[in-house]
Image 1: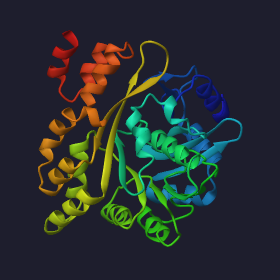
Image 2 (image 1 turned 60 degrees about the horizontal axis):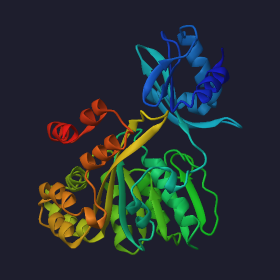
Image 3 (image 1 turned 180 degrees about the vertical axis):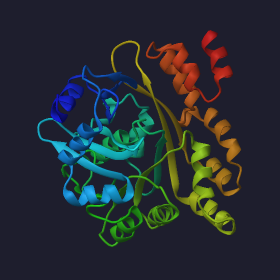
Image 4 (image 1 turned 45 degrees about the vertical axis):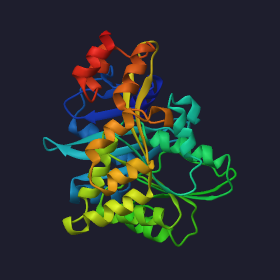
Length: 351
């Protein structure tokens, strides 16, 4: 079985990730569960051969310099992949994430209706957060597609790598990939402000420069969409503030209070009613009360505001999880394990 056979088998099982590690058979992740393929144990030579098959010589040279390499790989009529090559136990290992090339419609994602309303915002900062593999990129791509079908605007995306291939419909869409079209998110974002965008998608606010530029772009009238690896709204606000030196944090609280429009935090669950995944979603909308909380460094009050503002479209993670459980979509064990307050939700589910 060669690399193509491995990827075809994973595609037939609708795998989200493929792991190719010497000393093990190929593994695939299907609905969050790691499963071995029916394949002999891989040798170090086989794994290195697979990496060489996917790369050019300059990429192999860079890999042997840094011992890590991120790139995208495509097999026509099959899939595109986001690939990370790295070393483990002195041999090469590959982690491959399947890139779904066509963004699904928002209504197909089992997301709260309020997410659709966010696509009507004229300006500001919208953050979609969650762990790796929680569906952040899919949600953002669906939001962009919704705007693409409705507006006549200029959309710029800065990605690592480009995952969904977005076709210009009513909007003009330009997609730039890290390493290929720009040296860094910060550089791409800085120059994008001179390229007449209306809407900017930043793949991840991973450093201070990118974060500062994203907030500045939102301040100057752009709608900026981005992601962070945080699990809830209050942690997201604190993570952004903590990126700045202490003597700038009061200023950034004020700027964030003015520009932030919403935080959407996702966690994916395996469905029990049929094969597939379903998201639990926390939504914080920046009402005047939330803006004051951010400015006055009272982020510990955010969970209470979310709980008491359901009529506005806000929802806490635990409320979303409970809703999925009572609708028969997820198991009780998963609900309790992923909850922000396990003891509290356990009592709620038992009621």
